[in-house]
Amino acid sequence: MPPDIRVHGLVKHYVVPERGAGLRASLRSVWRRRRRLVRAVDGISFEVAPGEIVGFLGPNGAGKTTSLKVLSGLLHPTHGRVDVLGFTPWDRRADFLARITLIMGQRQQLFWDLPAGDSFQVNKAVFGIDDAVFRRTVGLLTELLELDGLLTKPVRQLSLGERMKVELAAGLLHGPRVLFLDEPTIGLDVTMQQRIRAFVARYNAETGATVLLTSHYMADVKALAQRVIVIDRGRLLYDGALHGLAERYAPHKTITVHLEQPVDPAELRGLGEIVSQEGAQVTVRTRKDEAPAVTGQLLARLPVADLSVEDPPLEEVIEQVFRGNRT
Image (cartoon, rainbow, N blue to C red; front, side):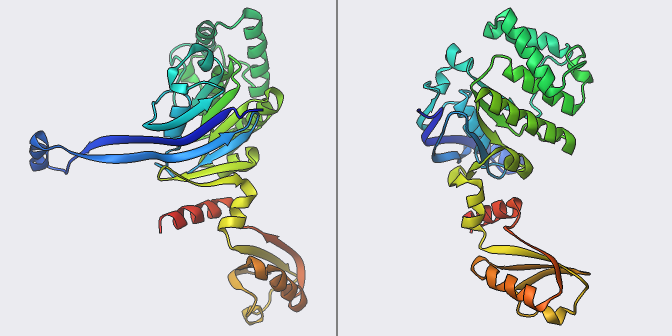
């Protein structure tokens, strides 16, 4: 089965004017305007299989949103080839637009002063959705996203979390096969973030939709994606399994030990880097290849009640990836 998304050598550059502050710089720019080349996306390539959920990660300014806009047809690339469901996105063909959706966190697509249900009716007309299909889809989305009572309220009266749920529903009314989700949980409280993640996972499981997800919340990525693509400064740094990030970029393990009673710090010498010692809990960092030996020494030398060995947190691994790219 061919991939739903193919990207080969995608490049998107901008030429932007720049000038210094002050009146003199303003006057000088009238005769001699300086310009700078911004490499928003700089030659990335990847594929996404049907039904796959892929995390698309990078710091601010890495090129994630620009890439999604090219993939959804909002931008023309400078160079490269892109194929989404067999279409060239920037041709903006109606049958292509009917099979994809781009949902951007805190970006309004609904009519602010109208009930969300009225915006749903507009989308129904735009996509030519059959009446029976529309009623069935709205019913399903209302159940999955708990929209009861929200569709009759003006959008401006909804909370941020309620608006995000309604925005998701509006973007899925036409049953898209490919979802581009750009920070769908940004600004939401923890409970609402969990609900949005659960909905995306269930929607993917029930429809087989392909999802390309950007998020600064690593909990989103860990809950939804087994594969991640990491970019920085427009370039691809990693494309592979989520667990492979730690194996490739984090050369150490974290060992957390709960002791039966506190011990003198001198007893911990030679057991790796002591990150912290708080009462009867000790946290040790050690190289991966030394972790089995250090664990054995801890168990032999200390009154251990419980012990866990973990890779570093994903946030720390991602930071390490970017730090390595910028040195």
